[in-house]
Image (cartoon, rainbow over all chains, first blue to last red; front, side, top):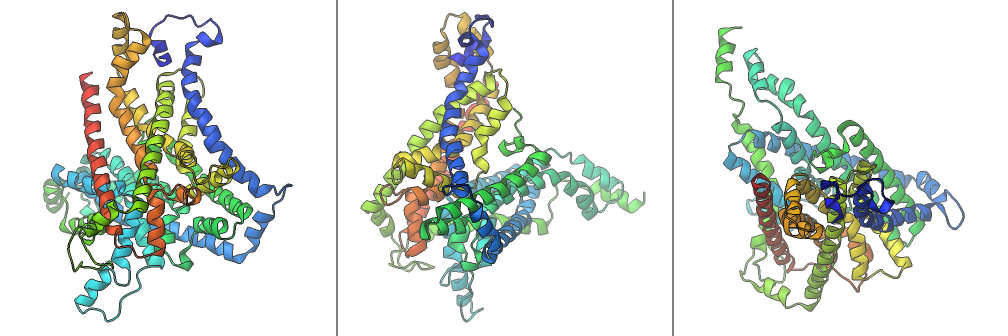
Length: 296
Length: 277
């Protein structure tokens, strides 16, 4: 195997290109690179071209997007839902991470198991479970009616509430893991020191524990925000007409209106927005965090 | 320092979790897991409508699912596509990881970032990109088209566990094998690969799971000729009331639990081999 090349000083580096260890190691990466050029770079470039040429160069699809108020509203809703679902995932996820850091191994393992299981279950199943829970004749409404608390069922689905609940549910694990891993690196003696110096429990949290966990919050929140911007399944299944995000607009343009060039322009806009957020992530946190803090 | 604060400090236990925090974190866990677990009792209902609580209990929905030709072909399509994707992406990922972790050439960081980059591109963008480019080659509505689309998508998830395992591998073992007279191929097949196998399998399982659950790209590419399980579920959730769905969801839940155990066992084996090796 070529990879084993550099363990033995057999070949001299001065031979032909084919005999240099560095070249042989590089050869191993080539199949993956070829596949990515063919199956990633080429398709992505083809939407860029589709959005700009028809057949000669034009910006009309982008101008149309900018000029139509409906589309600016979709953009605004996309941003709004992304921010809100990131925040609510933080509110739900942070206490879990905090408890994970401090709980006994038994409780910790139970929590970790629940989070990982939820994380592994099919996205469709998770969204569908909320339909069962929230729909008109769903679990929440049935229980409330049974208890005599309400006369007519609440509308909990196909509105912003439904989308927020569904997206929060999916994003919480992505928030918990980075915060938990940052918290594991915090020396709890710092808290003891703060208390020794007269800080209350609340002060200790706000002045010591919380600021130290901020890198985890930042990493989790930006990751979730990037995912939220391009989210498609949940707004389509749990949202109403007013909660359709830019991804849903793209699908409608392709499937219902067969307007590929405009859908391509929308995709390029979404991709650029994602890349901007990712650049911020990369600038402040480093891309290594995406794969669990392993530096290469 | 006053007497009071000294007393409080000596009692302070950073591991203490107050009851309000137990309630908040407990409800958060309940929020994560309860709706999904609720699907299990719902799947036992025998009525033609989905009701809570189910009035008649039985395994009718499961029986119906396993005897339904359209659902069975969707499951089969999904299995074929996911297995092929996992194989393809694990092979590419293993080769690339060997080169990237052990190689010494320029631009490794850049290539690494390139391989990971499909992770951050929104799925809907990938879906449209493949829709447009697969249409040019007449590959819409084919399983091959799906495999081609899922390969870049799953590549990062097979490269990450494989690279992590390779980093923990002690290469002096290879030296020992070579000194004892093994060829390079023999060394790789008999020494290196058996030790890194749990990592490779983990990568393959991740790739399989992602392909098996993918719906956004499938919506654009499946057509009516290569319908996968998620695509069929999507259609049913969106446009009909299907009493089989809780049963199908429960089966997927069991699959997730099974995969979780499998990955856990593999992870254990990796740490054991690394410490023993």
